[in-house]
Amino acid sequence: MSDDEIPQQRGFDPEIAGRRAECDGGGMIPGTQYAGRQEFTGRLTGDYIDHGEPPWRWYLMMDLSIKPAGYAEEAVWCEKESLFFTDEDAA
Image (cartoon, rainbow, N blue to C red; front, top):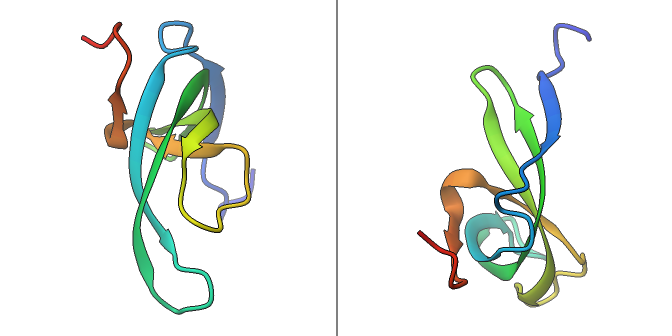
């Protein structure tokens, strides 16, 4: 790893695999130089990536039922602190 690379580690969390959740975040608005709020609703796979030191955890969400207009991807990485569980298993 070079000095410019951010440390990362992949993993799997079976406790959240299959859970329904919402994810709030921000992203570029296509065709502009501005960013805006983005909302996603979908199913968490349980896959995650920890970036940096200390680690900053991101979970993979698929089966998106709500996503921003023009978002062409079938999945999104959601930051742990921006996730809100919507299923009956929510604590």
